[in-house]
Image 1 (spheres, rainbow, N blue to C red):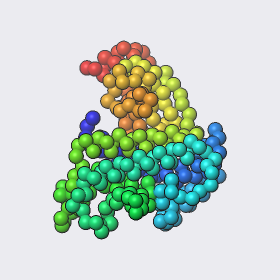
Image 2 (tube, one colour):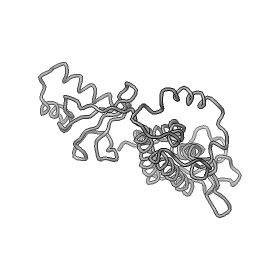
Image 3 (cartoon, rainbow, N blue to C red):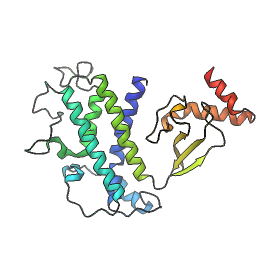
Image 4 (cartoon, helix red, strand yellow):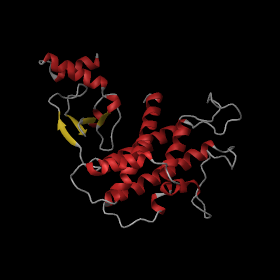
Length: 264
């Protein structure tokens, strides 16, 4: 995969988790229903909460906070799992980048020890921010904004791949848990790359992603989701939609012809 594309996907996934974390926490305290999530009467409330300053207590690790018994076990399990994945990823990034970082540096990630949870007290939000900084190479020798000695070493290639994998896994888990209002629809036009069934998934009236049932055998230049389907996220849909639009205009182009166009 193109490194620039992988980096952009990693950062987008980390930011999505931060954006949706409040919704996921709220979902734990509401019974799962087939209705929209967040409920429309609660959406305005969540927007107002997001505008308020983020309190330290709100950043404490979900697993360490005192909270009532969850009404939505799926959301509870997702919050615990995503938080632990991000903590472990932050540990990995810290291990290979901050050997020479001063112990009192605010940007440093502190490990969990017998004396305390370290930076985990800042919660999944800070873990995501820390990982994003390491992925983007902030405060390294290659960072143009670093005027003094670099605080961190660059992430090695294997760690960048691991960050990409874990970040997308976290984002996928959060979206799977919160997509109560998602609607799926099969396209009447097949995948231009392999002629398999295309399925679009919409939420709040907007198409969020499109998947191809062809799986790993499909040659489309997009990643696989956790179900093994080629998936176009919203930022990746341009080329696919352009090809489908061309098929719609012609009205007579067979799937085999579309595949031939792609391969040429």
